[in-house]
Image (cartoon, rainbow, N blue to C red):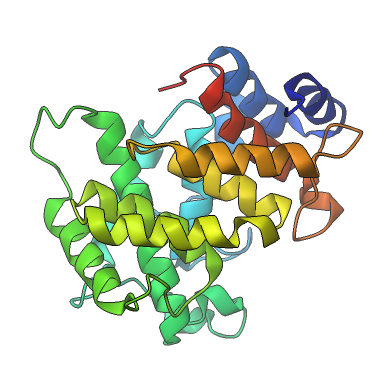
Length: 275
């Protein structure tokens, strides 16, 4: 079993104010202090996205999706900053349904966000489509109103579907898979989403703690019906939790608190329903 109390203790001991505010919201639904939101929102560009670096001026698709995940942990996907970010994502979708980073970011972009790279394009399309999907699910959990981003999400989903291989694998990074599974399921590509989930299940035993946490935290934000993959990911997290309550990040010790928060977010699915 995942030791949630130990994980909470790790974040309290090692987290910064924003990370501790995220923890409070995940634990009890406590509204974050204005300062926690301001630390994130102050770096938002006038266009609506966030730059890849704090001193940058060009908004990044990858960085914007990362900030949306942080804001999701601080109260959900609503509010002026979130709305500006979502509107910016819609505005920079390409005609073929994809997202790519601005070419001016090529010199500093990581492999998964490299402008013009097919693997990065598929990844960014799945991630941007996923967060727009989460915003739709949160605003209208029972599809009681017309989707705001219907055309945007259909175009993104069709692009992703067209690039899936017959065996359900995809020509891109591992994280593309769980974001694509959520996007495709909500766009009623149920068969394609199920194939992707089966591939993810096969890869789970070899996933890093960070990947397992990110996958479970993402998929618990959409209703996939059968939660077998989430249950399996929770088991993987129980096997990889450290004795101090934290989990290892793939980016080094400085990001262990963020990974631990992600694991808590993933595992809260089985204890309390946050949304």
